Length: 265
Image (cartoon, rainbow, N blue to C red; front, side, top):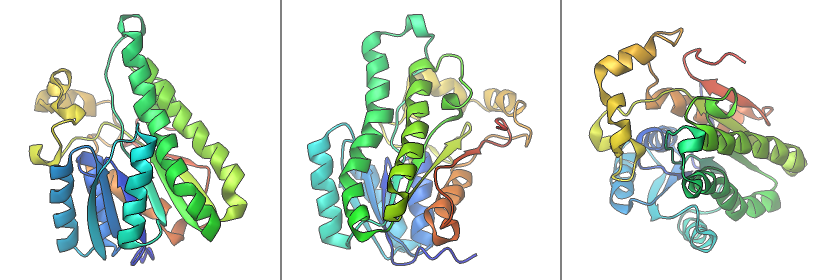
């Protein structure tokens, strides 16, 4: 299916690791020009190099912190100056920390909300005015089934991702007549293909997540999935590219779980 993404300018936050990396490369393979925003500048540049080699119209690595509105404004300006107006935004950057609610330090809860929800707001606010002015644009945000059905040890994280879903629905209503669409993709457990596909700051390099790299643990988790396996980054990237494209021109305000059937609602 021709998605019509060739020549479009796309920004992917957290675009250097795991799911973000796969989204950046999938957009590049469709011929889009991709700006990879990430805290890890070196990893982002490596992904940009790969993107150029797999068909991107152009690829740009930009160090950016989604919790810094001023820095984001400068990053988006650099993308616009170097590549043109942003036509696709993928709010992928996020952070997680598993903990029972009463065991979690309130400061850590606030950090989860700041990164996952406020960070999404910050970047959307930096990109949206120009989309509204041009009366065209697609925003796809990465949510989580923790924000749809709740998950143990993911109270603040799930609350933040529920906020991303609600925000996207609200913006879909507010800016639909301005030609801008908003949708959310909720991945299931999605394992990096290779260790070098994640940055040093990735949650996959946190000690508490090391157990999830164990094949026996992955097999145990996969038994809860109707399709019998965990997700691959490319599974999520395909859904994001579709929703970002003109093939989804009449889809907005929707939440799609890409979780092998773990969530059916």
